[in-house]
Amino acid sequence: MRFVFKMIVFPFWLLTAFLALMLKWTLNLSAFVLALPMLYIFGCGLYTLYCREWLQFLILLVAEFGCFVLIFMGTLIADAVERFSGWVAGL
Image (tube, rainbow, N blue to C red; front, side):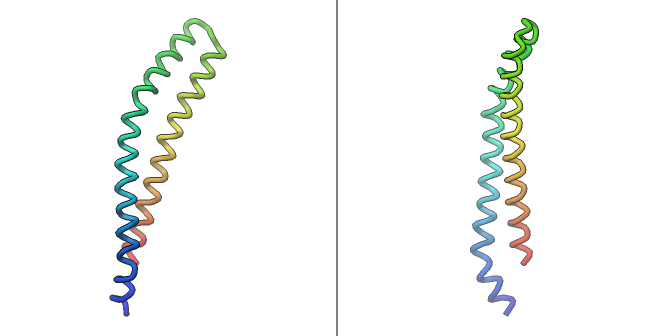
C-alpha cells in the first residue's frame, strides 16, 4: 500500500522539485540582473546626498529598498518551494 501511495505522489514531487530548481535559477539570474541597477541607484543616491537633494535621495532610497525587497522575497519563495518539495519527497 505504501508503494502505491509513493507512485501516486511521485509526479507531484517531480513537479515541485522542478519548480524549486527553476525558481533557484531564476533567483540567481535576477540577482545578477538587479545588481547593476542597484549599484547605479546607490551611486546616484550618494551624489544626491552630497548635493543635499533630500527628496531625490528619499526616492532613490525607496527604489534601492524596493530592489532589495524583490531579491529577499524571491529568496523566501524559492526556499519555501524547496522545503515543500522536500516535505513531499519525505511522504
